[in-house]
Image (cartoon, rainbow, N blue to C red):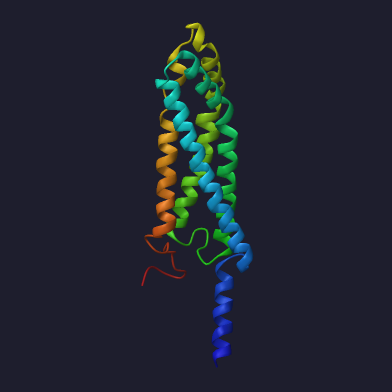
Length: 187
């Protein structure tokens, strides 16, 4: 009798996800996910330091170098770590009991990650050439600071969002997402 119960339980678990990650693959994927998220946070901290150095640096040369480094460094390493984090998160969602859209905290983390990836490409990347040019021309005194006036917001928004995602991953609040029942309304 226990074999039938165990088999039905196993069948029910298999139906919940597309596939089931084995223990070693789950751990490897989770480690990669955590490292990529940590890298992303580290890159955001570097971005914040460069933005603050560019804004409040002691000389125009230091400020210019900070903006040039920002233009050179910010987009691709951040985007790569964000996409690795997104990919491993999706794999973990599909291959574990948490599911991709089964729990609120997973769905919100997915939405936050997707939003930040889009913001990197749409809001941050297009202005980086102008930031680099501003950094190169800073020493001449001919540059207009409007190119860098809004640079404080990307690391502030990203670090806040990644902190929220980390808290969600640890606390796992709100429980399951309720699905509409077939054949009628709620019980």
